[in-house]
Image (cartoon, rainbow, N blue to C red; front, top):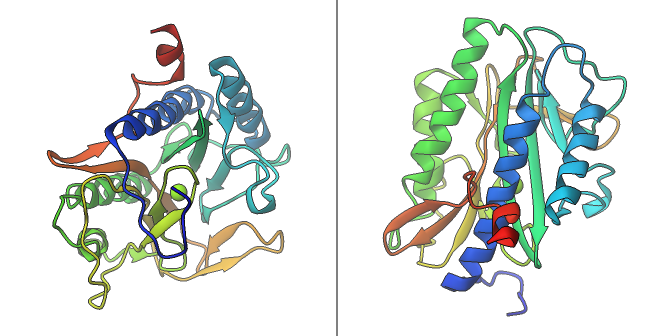
Length: 265
Ligand code: MG
């Protein structure tokens, strides 16, 4: 069970059940955090709420302390792409968009999920960016069949984003997940024709397209965490934890199967 680098860890049905509880809990917490994304709220408020909701459900926030990240929740407002640090000074305004990226650990198993939500009234061009990014994830998830190729995931994202001339971020990729937040394989959001990896039943992947309204290029802020678009245009991010099963892809990060229910049941 101990992972060696480059080793793909296939999960049993029982292990998928545990990852489902973790990933579903993330979705349920984000359902509640979405309601708090209103003008005047700070990103620190959202982080504190995320931590409290983990305590209520008996799960552990996955990101805090990982690689030295100082908070529970990764936030990304407007031109921020991923990995923004929540702050009391970052106040949400009407028309902003915010990416909420969150993970928890349940009985040693990880779940990871992200979505981008609007604050108040969001302009139509931004709404299109967010909706297309969500559809990129949906299309990519549909490629997760046993026997399919991993590179089809990136192809699906790139094709749809390309129709809108949006930039597909290449500097950050999706990943396997299980006993650790980041396992092999890496899951790029672009098509790599040299990638011959084949998907197998029992793989669990986090697919997470990051789509920019303009250039795909990003740069890092001086906090060494926050990635922003190189041209200052907006960016959206969605992520699901997805199992490759004999019946096709199963999205594990859906609400309704979380830790509160698992404990009660
Ligand atoms: Mg992830």
